Length: 187
Image 1 (cartoon, rainbow, N blue to C red):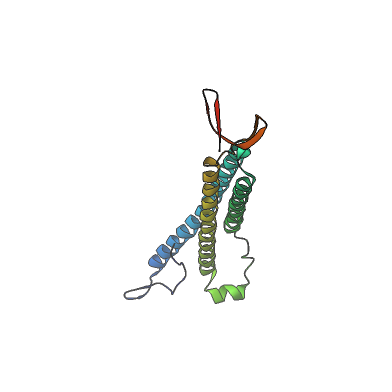
Image 2 (image 1 turned 90 degrees about the vertical axis):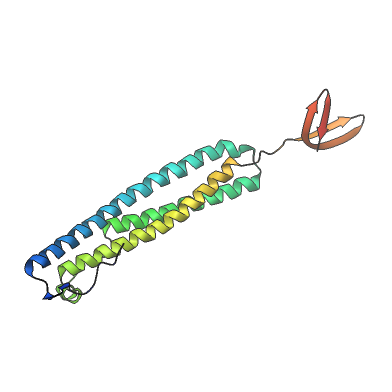
């Protein structure tokens, strides 16, 4: 998104005429409104993705990782938790952007320093756009962590059962490599 603050608009022949100024003001109003609507849509999207991806990976991980080693399960759980945490941070930033929190009321003196109410609205829209971009960066990190956790779930090695065999007074242990025609091979 482009920066919305700047110098007073001028035409090639000098200051803008009232009709031109009205057109510039209407354009800024539409742009500010679009930024606020975009923040709302982004918040809804982050909520949906976080819920679906985090819940989906969490539910599938439970049954898939049951046979995996403890270290594999711990690593997957940490990455999944990091992905959910990053997504929550992204969601909080998006909620802040959507609500406009942190702007507070502006005194008349501050409005004059900013260039009037329209300039203050434009500055607030620029701040909302910056927060949405920050939220998007956090969401990308969350998505990468969730995709990594999902990949770990899908490629989780199953722990081969350990077997102890006693035959003719000797003890042999290992995991089953193969078993055919009455012969058991351990590794």
